[in-house]
Length: 160
Image 1 (cartoon, rainbow, N blue to C red):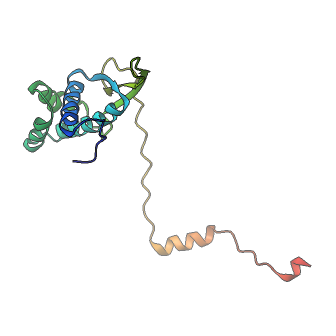
Image 2: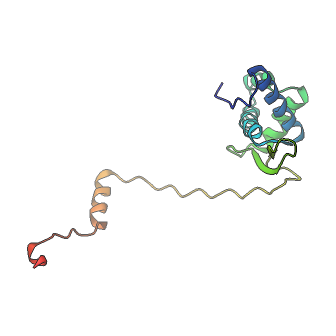
Image 3: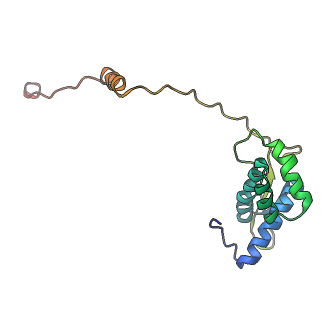
């Protein structure tokens, strides 16, 4: 796996905590946690939605090895896969909320986007720039020479 934040926990505890948090995020579609944990959960939740969009048996087995609960797995491969079928990535949103009273840890909501009862509405997708046809090197060179300003030569007469 890729490098994770340590979150001040042993590996077994950390992975178990992240698996549970991803499962709860899929189940409830919004959870509140600390900002650093939410950033880690966001990476893993986006990967799980990507597996749900694939829809293959291999993807289902990979997701089942990570998330907890058959209802969560079913929701990944049906509801969330259908909801995000046209989206290329960025399935979750992180919203900072408050400072926790006991230890002053910054808290945040992590939620799936494009759902009902969102805390903040999604931005409309940015339009893609039109594709330009590539020019062959000779035409591009000729156009560059035409558009470039003429070179000014310094002469000794101009200084006098």
